[in-house]
Length: 204
Image 1 (cartoon, rainbow, N blue to C red):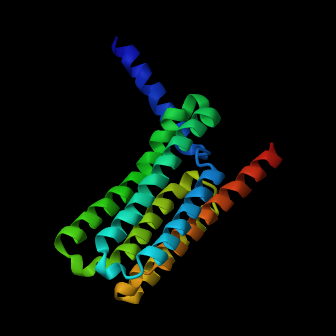
Image 2: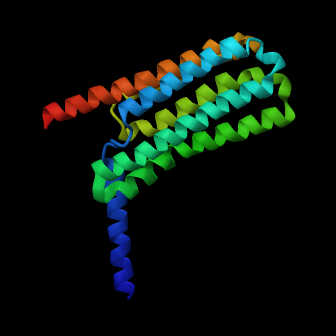
């Protein structure tokens, strides 16, 4: 029985190593482009109905947190089905690896948001920049099993987040700071994945 457990453990380790050394193809370009469009629509909604977010911080947070949850849910469903189709036997390990790479950034973003809202509401203008910087860390940590140009997307989110922080006040809550950052960023990610998929098909 001990030999059987050892053998099963070895197989599990091999599958895990294979998953970590295989380029992840579970992110669909069309779906990620869609999340970018959702961010642009949310920015447009903010511009029309929430022109002064400093007096409606709860509405601002609800808008962008709701946008993030919606985009994550849609992307999550698509990642699950696409990974099952493209990675077949390694799908569970591939999804687990993808989640492990991005979840620390997601968790940090959630905790920072809760702390600032609960204890330091006077600096909530920092949230757009912090969200973007933290998101960039998630992208960077995922780069090792995504197409190499994906580092450009991480650099974009880092730069846009630093620009928001450099504004130094509630101007960072303007619609463009989130809409442009995540709209353009997700479209960039989608473009990189689309080009990589086409190159893979040509090589095949």
